[in-house]
Length: 381
Image (tube, rainbow, N blue to C red; front, side, top):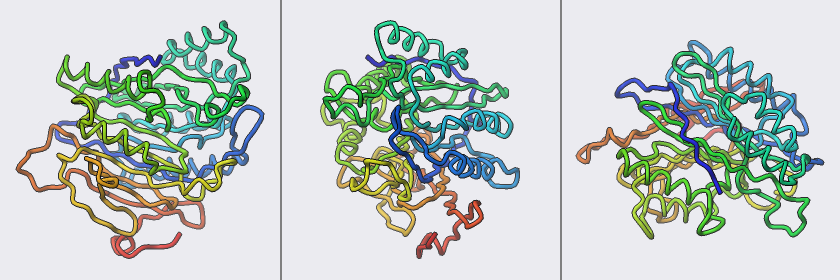
């Protein structure tokens, strides 16, 4: 079963300030390897990721209020993890959270990473050691994510989390297709903000009584009943060719619509889905649909009217009891604020969620902010 770890952070928002988030909807390229899926051109992918970090850490780049930086599932090659961590440690501002997925690695390599960053991953390391002693193969592939946090006092923390639901092997009888199942999820708690991070299918119901998302809802409810504080934000990183699958709509409806029971712990949660772009190529995933459509979902009490522009739209996911900011499928960087539910007044007419900027790639490996006219009328590239 999933174990949710309460993880205190020295991470405080100034009073009255919205958290700000940037989704890097960049391409993934993954090919089948001996141990799961790997990035075939690691240097090229690292340069793409580094260009995003360079943009958001520019002193005059307009991102001084950035709190959350979201990359897709499976985007970073393991060979550049040290480069990524060193780059973030050098350039990341205090009070910033970066999350990203890595290519698949053998279980033995994942264990070595947990041991290396043992200060923040002791419980996950215990679980892996127990699984290895119980007969898990050291070569079993692991799909995992990394959450890097620069706390307010400058302390640099690294959390590793394995995916709880295999995205491929569970549909096959062949055991060799299975991935390692992670059982650790952190509930990050700062004085003024708390959040969790999931990897794609961990958000879906796979078993009605023991699903990870079911456990997270129950945990958030218990937290609410104890402290009247629910889960503020839930981030879901994806490499998903079916981002608008009805299964996602069903779970979101349960979050915000109280289908079967009251869920106050997640009723006001801001759910952020960060996907890879339509330029992605995942071997075996051809023909399933189009990547992209990263989105931000909030409850219906936030009062957002449906609109449709070339780069984003606001809708209710086909009649679900929610408001969804739905982006396009192209390679883009989306910069926006997250609404805080406790700032809402039922009499207000203001919109609690605003898009602060959208960036498209240029031919020289950099990023350019789209103008208002381009967002209204559309732009290529």
